[in-house]
Length: 108
Image 1 (cartoon, rainbow, N blue to C red):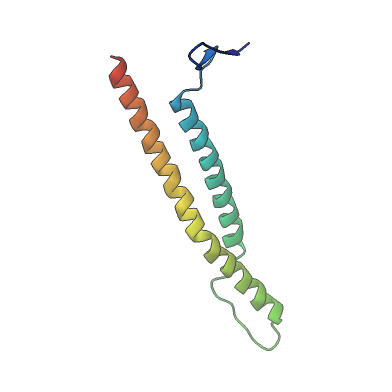
Image 2: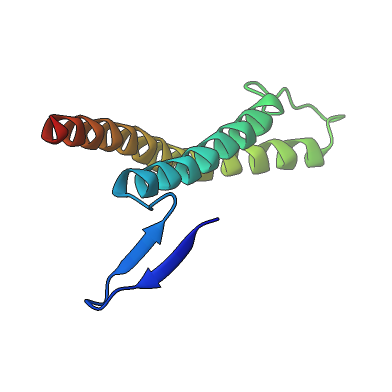
């Protein structure tokens, strides 16, 4: 069981597993990675229903054209968000690796 107590200097004494900087970085990375994977799944679901070529004639209902336009609009909306979250995931991975190496170098 983990307990916390405050010392005379006002700092927390943690008995058990301390919350280190690396632990916080891993938690943030995990959150960003989950969002990234969810966006990838949503993007894949949208593009599965997108049609590259839409052949229209008099018998084709206009709802088909509107549905395809809506899918294209959604894909175009999500692409910049996907790029930003993907970049954040890569940067967090590099930051965690760098911090881990820095921590290991200073412990020796």
